[in-house]
Image 1 (cartoon, helix red, strand yellow):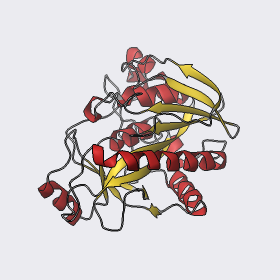
Image 2 (tube, rainbow, N blue to C red):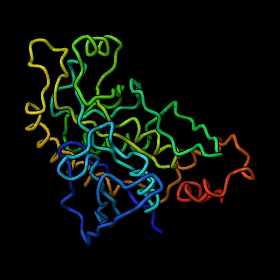
Image 3 (cartoon, rainbow, N blue to C red):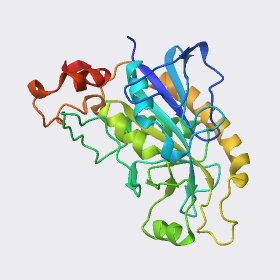
Image 4 (cartoon, rainbow, N blue to C red):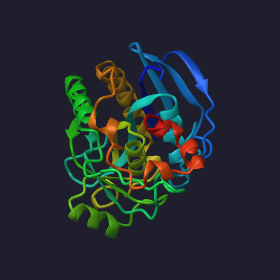
Length: 284
């Protein structure tokens, strides 16, 4: 199976128009159904699989997202790289609406746990550097060539939601030096690392959260125009980046499980091995 590229679309990005030979994939998983039908196709001669994070029509709240199903399904289809497009609020003056931030770090303010493991198999992946540096640098280079307003690096703080921040929360996150805030992407990064997928995030700024007192607090209505513009920018960026992604999955993220397992292989329960077959295939 040719290694494929996954794209997870965020708020405003619900499809990729330039896919050719498009096919729909209904992928049941041990963790339930993905957010929506996964659309496969070709872009610049590469196999692409696209899933809209919140479902078509934006029907799924952040805390309801089937992250494990989404990543398991993409891995079962042969995906070894994922570009995540996500809407974020800015916590710093230099990041304006319609800017792109390519974060290299996360800070977790959620109450959620995201892992494929358990059920008799214990694994702890290294997550000091949660974003694939190779994929992030590639995206930065393409965005710069396209003269997009891009910022390389930064910390994405992940909150629960679905409500937006209070001013006290926003100001605290800002003073701690965090750069952008969102509700969804950290889980994808954690699960992609466990699935040995190289992941990078294209964070599209829609607002200044609510710390900037000379701006109106963020509302869903206020960000719609920015979402539409950001979606078109993201499509251009993805289309130009895809042909530059390597053909062979030989980056460090693609061997993340080499040093992760604590449970001896002979003790892995058969049921858990089977449930995680797309992820564990090279160990079975």
